[in-house]
Length: 640
Image 1: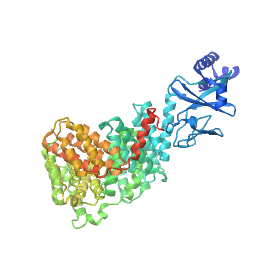
Image 2: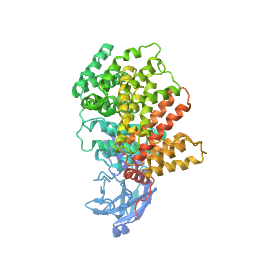
Image 3: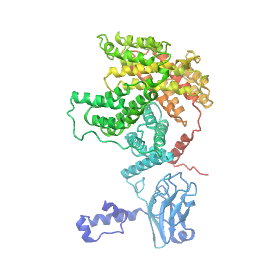
Image 4: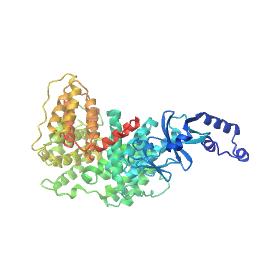
């Protein structure tokens, strides 16, 4: 570290005694000074500097401005780190340099900014020698900061952006982190945002972190520009969730000692946790969960959390189950050791405080769905105990399709019996049944008539996001009883939304196959229809595209872009991720891709398109900020 100081401050020489004590080689010190001398660049005369108060120069591809203040020279980047305006056009007073575009202020000597919406400006060593002005710019194109130090700086700015809701700072941080650290940038960004989001919001895990997880789940389905927009959208919503919110203070485990990790200990801990959540005791629940995270496996902890989530029906409109699933998905991205103790306890407060649907009148009358569910839950051991049961084998698309449309019937008893029959006869696994449920919920969106109240789009979306969460959570643990209970809850909520398909929207019929040359044109037409909030036109155009010879990947990427280009609200992000994941699971659960699977995919994509079109366009202010960050990264001039 001291040697680094000598390199940048060669005139601050240590005396020979201290050099000997610290083991610094005077020859190396002299060599460093010689290297620096070679890096000096003559940028003009002292007379010119004193006459105008500044000099402009380009050194090693850096545009630099040198100021003279109180007889001393100061050299900084001439490009304001906020939005690129020339600092040479700014004002210098009391050693504070003020940019004249957005009034960002900088300490002229250190380059440090007083305004967090900007960034620190690079400074360079400058000096007067024999009537000439010299500036030293290191060869390293990143300036005076080594790469690791620069990454640390960028991540500090990322945290500041989250803390103060500085959207441009967040966008620039994502861009620079990705450039400096391409292999692990996404993981680093997710880790920082998750730690911030779970500790700076009293209620813990919320919509912002759910959006961030949704967007990170679909990064591989689109191009780089949409990937950037997706991450920034997530970060902005995490920041918004936490802005001026009271912090959450994590609790310690019940004991710092490791438990014996025996089945008996696990059973006891699981019982404690379910009891405390049932009794709405967040502190006892969190300490128990902290202990479980410390002592038991990911699968055991997941089974414990989701069993507590299904002890009551459809908690908080399905959000609690969905948030829990997303929390585990985020942990899978940043690592169990790093994420579990931070993320999972942040779920507890909402689990304990959630509204339980058995408390709602519409679940009791005119059909007593709560009693119907409880009776079905008593039959679960018998259903899962049959020797014929399918234990994960893939099934034919016809079976999936048959159950999908039975789940959309208007008889709740028929829906329950269809689920039980599919499992008990060995036709389908619980995962395949969960897949059918998620597809059925997506079809509700395809059939949603625009004569309904606009807010009811979200009523139907709640059902879809919950059913997709049940489907995705089935991979986390082997407790099929819990998954089947969640399926019953989702199926009955889906039944309750049936009136939103009366009358049903007109779903475009299948059409003749089109030439592949039509594909790119149709994708543009989909976005154009969304620009005019033309729901039915967008649906018809997607239907046409699906009968072209182009692949679905381009369509899905276009739908992602349709979301990330907007100032979209929470549920729209849920929608696009649930659409993609349900289609992926449908492919995974079926033995072959037949006409039944093709038709179900068509309906899912039409439903997603209709929802996005109904919620477009918006002001698109955030995409504009992202565009500014990209232009700044490329070095473009944004001013006049």
